[in-house]
Length: 147
Image (cartoon, rainbow, N blue to C red; front, side, top):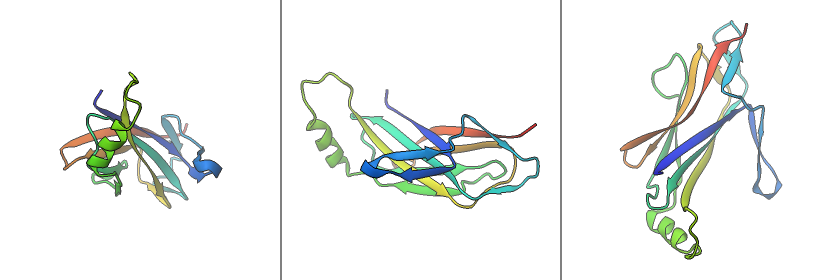
């Protein structure tokens, strides 16, 4: 395993006591939309995770969100990552006798408010890792017209 990631698509993300996050109105692979396109949601949120093996630290992460009806991303958001030397130091400080795999995780929330949906299709998230060398799919949500 080198690198992978995923996204949670929802209506809201709330910060809770103790550093926890609550995801409100999570979508389960499909968003059912009104036949009256385009339409606007007051708020739409995407929480992302990029997971890399410790042997492959993350030099940079740039999130891109694509929506149906547009070719270019509607948002490009950099995710702050510690310098590679600090990532390696954190990993080496872990218990050396452990055989558990070691990972580096970068996560971020995209809050889109308002959020316009132009047509049916896929809302997708990708992460560009490093100096534009690797693009990683972080998931997609299909928008369909409700019957």
